[in-house]
Each structure stands twice: as structure tokens, then as C-alpha cells.
Figure 1 (cartoon, rainbow, N blue to C red):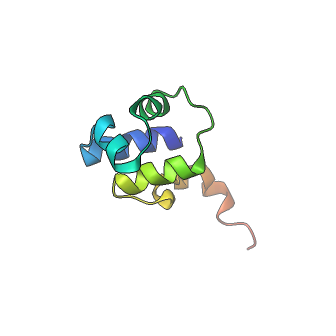
Figure 2 (tube, rainbow, N blue to C red):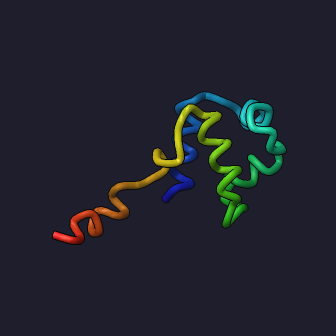
Figure 3 (cartoon, helix red, strand yellow):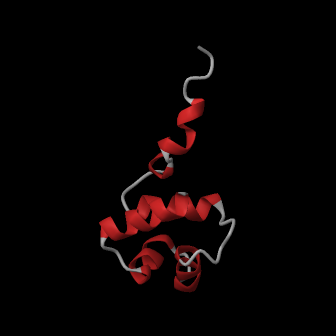
Length: 75
């Protein structure tokens, strides 16, 4: 799931919610809600800002195993 991957990115970056908030301009309370899973459908623009702040891209959120059955379509 994308949220699990995002949490792992945060852990790897060693950045706090406060640091992410300062980097992105997104309120800390919003960051905390997103990482707690309370925001079911966050804005793509917010997620993009967060992953870039953590040193990643949106593509890094892709869980290849989730789509593994679809990769071979068109053979």
C-alpha cells in the first residue's frame, strides 16, 4: 500500500513531521493526519511535495508487486 511505502520513506529520511511541514508548507497537523492514515484521499499535490521533500519521487510510491499480474499484458 502506498501509505506503508510513504511511512518507510519518512523513516529512511529521518525527517520529523515538523521538518516535512517546514519543507513543504503543509501544516504539521495535516502531515500527522496523513501519516496516521486519517486522510483517506490526500491531494496528489500534497503527496508529491512530501515525497520530494523526503528525497523521492511519486514513482517510488509504486508497489510493483501490486501490479505484477498486469505487467505482462499485451504479450
